[in-house]
Amino acid sequence: MFSTSWCGYCRRLKSQLDSQGIGYTEVNIEDVPGTAELVEKLNGGNQTVPTVMFPDGTSATNPSLRDVQARLAA
Image 1 (spheres, rainbow, N blue to C red):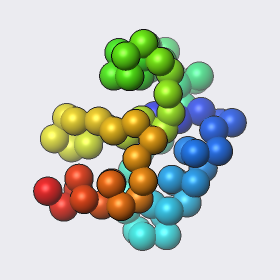
Image 2 (spheres, rainbow, N blue to C red):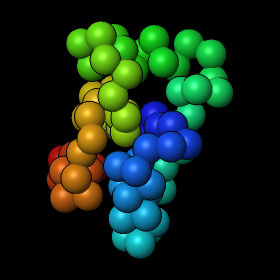
Image 3 (cartoon, rainbow, N blue to C red):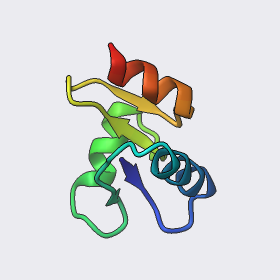
């Protein structure tokens, strides 16, 4: 999951994933060189977070818990 330290949507999604026992790796786009550019590329030029990358290589921008669960179950 790409995030920032100040993103409320990121904190909410992390809390929901934690409560459901869904593991993830958090990457702060302000701290890790090159990741802000990757997020821009995935989001049509916008640094929108949270952006979640899934094991199959797809991504979702600001997904709900339900969206994440469905993508992981597919």
